[in-house]
Length: 227
Image 1 (cartoon, rainbow, N blue to C red):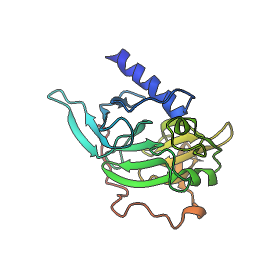
Image 2 (image 1 turned 180 degrees about the horizontal axis):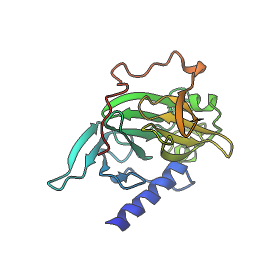
Image 3 (image 1 turned 180 degrees about the vertical axis):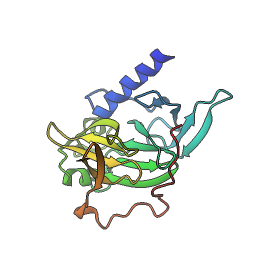
Image 4 (image 1 turned 90 degrees about the horizontal axis):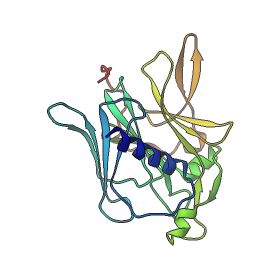
């Protein structure tokens, strides 16, 4: 079992890094935390292409695994998860859910806390934040247009601010620039040193002030113990 999970993680890392590879049809997969965790995800497509399908976040229980969140979508390019002790929920980052759309419509990153949608960032949004944009070879191969573009980045996973219960998703653009997203809000933040600990400082995104999150999105929850 450990071996199969390790193989899945290696495959997920390859997809998140967008290494050049032959595009394949959608297929079911399991996603796990990078570290030991009672949570994992089952990702099942409804069709050979597209986002239709379902994703479930489950908690391992001796008496039978418990479903803690359900989403009515499938993400072929993978998801990244993190646990928020403050909210007592699993945070999910969808990685590049669209292909072949205009840069201002094509979603690169989407954030959820529990089952609540928080915020999305398009190819255009990431370009404004410093990401390089290049031709999307996979989209071209799939017949979605020779002008298809994508933002270039590498997913570094979910990280903890030192000596706190605050966590953030880290997305590297290049050797000098990394974007950090608070897992509770899905918003861009800076990780700054504050004495013997770090803290997350929200970044005012001038180019996206008029792009609110889904109105049903949640905010900070009550503190909860680590599962």
